Amino acid sequence: MADESIAVSAPEAPPIRIVIVDDHTLFRGGLKALISSVAGMEVVGEAADAEAAVRVAVEARPDVMLLDIQLPGTSGIDAIGSIRRSAPELAIVMLTMVEPGEQLNQALRLGALGYVLKGAEQSELIDAIRAAAKGHLLLSSAVAGRLTEATATGRWQPPLPLLSDREREVVDLVAAGHTAEQIARTLHLSVKSVRNYLASIPRKLGASSREELIDWARSAGLGR
Image 1: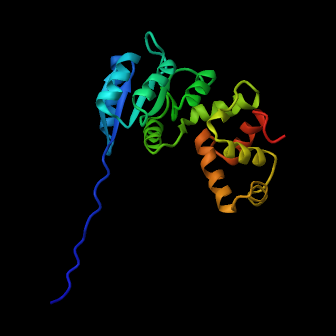
Image 2: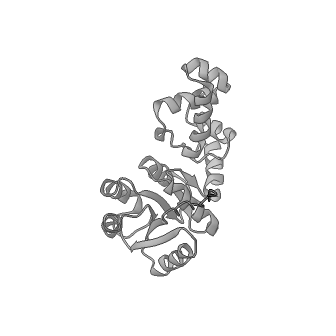
Image 3: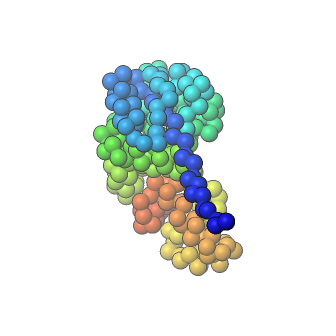
């Protein structure tokens, strides 16, 4: 009897579950319509303030929360800690009209995985949601561009506290002009491990290139 091969299709990945937190009903409605039109995403809850955000994070068990910075009462920034304590696995993407600055620094230090201006392209918001769901940091292009300028003029310090001690050592040596091979010898690592760090650290900090990473590191006092 001839063998018959049976094609087994891979199971579809579950949709990314998203909660929207913003005090403007029309804005929430627009985001919900956008997200609902994207395959592999679904909105599972909404909230208009920080207290409700904590509650819906626990009840809806979302993967990603879109969190407005300027909420009534407790701000989105101040709410990050209580939200993450209530739902530690939840990824948070900040939404704001505010130019990058200390609020961005605070959000990243507290564990937010994205910072998107409300005027960004829709595709950038979708990309930020997908990145956050995978545990990756992504900043919208407008934010990244303004950070580069602000970093160069010393008006903003990159969020290097997000890095582990080993990652800081790698960044320090990169900023000092060392190659991957030199860094490997200095830190007693394999070259492959160093290259993995050089691939993951820029994503973690939202740097779009090695050159931008070096600029940020030097502005933070590393590589000297």
